[in-house]
View (cartoon, rainbow, N blue to C red):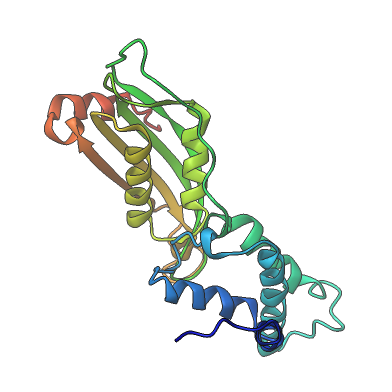
Length: 243
C-alpha cells in the first residue's frame, strides 16, 4: 500500500534539492525520459522556468575555472575580468540558443491556389559552430521546395527562422543539413525538398591546417528532387554561382 507523502516530506526533498546544480537537475530529467542530449539536440522541454538563468550563472562559474586553468589573471586583467560572464551569455543566449529554447512559431496556410511549381529560398546566412572545437561555421543555405495541393505554405522568413534554430547548436555540417531537412519536411509535407549549404569552417582556417580558401558544400535531396534528375538539375542551375 502506497502512503502519500506528507508536507514535511516534500519540504525535506526541496531542501535537499536546493544545493543541486541546475545542470544536474536537467540532465536527470533527460535521462529519466531517455531523451538524447547530444550537442546538436534541443532540450528546451526539459528546462523549467527560471532554470536557464540559473544555468547561465553555473556556466559562468565553470568558465572562470577554465580561465584560471589557462593561467589568466582574471582578477587583475581588465580585459578578461568579465569574460566568463560574456562567454556564458554568448553560448546560452546566442550561438547555442537553439539547444535551450523552443522552435519558432510558424503561421501555416493551406495551398489554396494548388501551387506546384519549384520555389527556392536563399541564400540564407548560416551561423553555427563545429561540435569538435566550438569554432565558427559561417556560410549560406539554399532551400528548394516542390509543393503539392496538400503542402502547408509558410512565410519565407520562417525558413530562415527554422535554419537559425537548428544551426544555433554545436553541429557538424552534414548532420545539420539533414536535421533542417527533416524539420521542413515535417512542417510543410512537400512533394520534394532540396537543400544546399556552402560554409567556411574556422576549425580549418584558424587552427589545424590553417587552410583559408576551403569550403564545404553538401546537399540533401528528398522526394521528386531525388527521383527526377531534370528537376534536380533545374534547382542546382538556378543557384547563383560566384565568380
